[in-house]
Length: 512
Image (tube, rainbow, N blue to C red; front, side):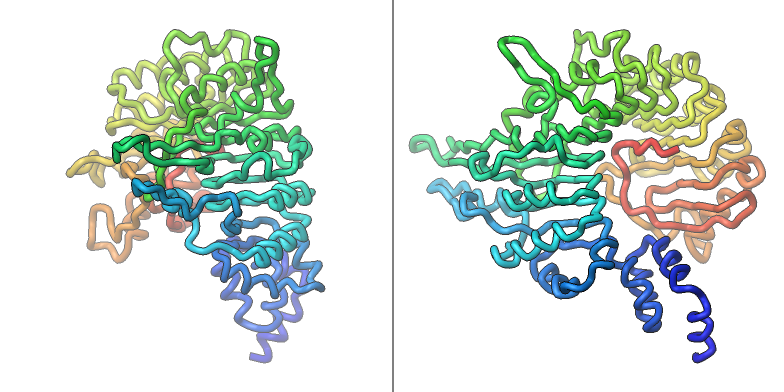
C-alpha cells in the first residue's frame, strides 16, 4: 500500500486533477475520491463542477460544504440544475373552488417548498458561482430574486427553463434582459399562474379558469444580444411576443443579430400534469415564419410543425446561409431548394416508401454532398437504406429510425450482418450509423438480448452482429442498432465498447 501511495505522489497534482476533469461520470468520480486522501483532494473539484439542487432538504445539506473560504471550489462550478423554489404569496396554491376545481394540483411542481430563509441562502450561493456556464431551471416558481441572480452571473452561457411559472409583472423589477451574456436558451413548457377560477351559474360542469398570460416581460430573456441558439415550444412564443411587435398598425422586428440555430419544438405531453391550451398558443408558430425570413444569420432550422397551406414561406432569397435543416417532408422540400445544406433531418412521416424515396431522389440531385442525414419512417423498408447509400456517398453520419414494430421483427440477424458489406461500404467517410426502432413513448429499455439468448451478454451479441462491418466500414466509430445501446471504438480495428443510452432525442443535435 505504501508503494502505491508513493507512486501517486510522484505524479504531479496538476496531472491528476486534469485527468479527473476529463471524467464525465459523477458516480465514478465519487468512487475515486473515496480511495485515498490524495485522490479526495484532487477529485473534489471535478466532482463539484456540476451541482444538482433538486430537493430543499438535500440543497440545505449541501450549503455548508461551500463555507466562506472555498474560492477555488466556487470558481470551479460549471453547471447547476436548480429545482428548488419558495411558494410566492400571490400563488393561490391552496385555492379550491366550490365545484371542486383544485388548482393545487395545477401548481404541484414540487413536493416540498423552501422556506424564505433557505431560498435566500440558495440564491446568495448561486450568485457566488461567478464562472457558472450552464444553468438549468425546472419545476419552480421564478422570483424577482432569481431574475436578479441571472444578471449577476457573468460566465453564464447556457440557460434552460422548463416547466416553470413566472410571477405577476407587477411583482418583478423591470430589467433589460438583452444584456444577459447567454448564447444558448431553451424555453419549454412555460406555465401560467391562475388568476381566478370557479363555476358559472349552477351548472357543475360549467367551470372556468383565467390564466395570467402577461409573460412577455419574462420571455424577453430571448432578446439577449449574444444569443446564438434558441429552443422554444408553443408555451413560449417569443416570435409574436418579443421579436415581432405591432407599431402603429405595422409590424417591426427586433431579432438578436447573432441568432444562428433555431429549434421550434412541439409541446410534449407531461404525465400527471394538467396542460391547458393557453391563448397565446392558438396561433403558434405563425409569427415564427416571418421572423425566420428576416434572420439571414440562421444556419440551423428545426421546425416541428407542418407548413401551413397557402403560405409563401420561405421567400426565395431568405435564409441564404441555411446549412442544417430539420422538419417534415413538406418543410424539407420547401427549405432545401437553393440553400447550401450539409445536414438534413426528416421527422416522422406517414408517407409511403414511394413518397420518401421520391423526396430523397430530389434531395440527392441537389445536395449529393450531404454530410449528415437523419430519417424517421413509419415502417422499415430496406429500399430506403439502399437509396440513401447510393444518393449521398459523402455521408459522415446516418440515422435511420422507424416506429416500433408490431409483433414480429422487420429484419433478422442475417439482415443486420448484411448492412455493412451490402450497403454501408459505399459510404467511405461514414463514422456514425444509427438504425433502430423507437417506442411510441420514447422510453428507453435495456433488454438482455435482441435475437439470441445463448450469448453471455447483449454486449457480445451486438459485437458479433457487426463483425462483417469491420472489414467493409473502416471509418466507423459509433454504431447504434437498439435504442438502449451504443457501440463505440477509438480507431480502425479497435474492439467495440458498449454504452447504455438513456434517452431518445426528438430533435437532431446536428453533430457530425
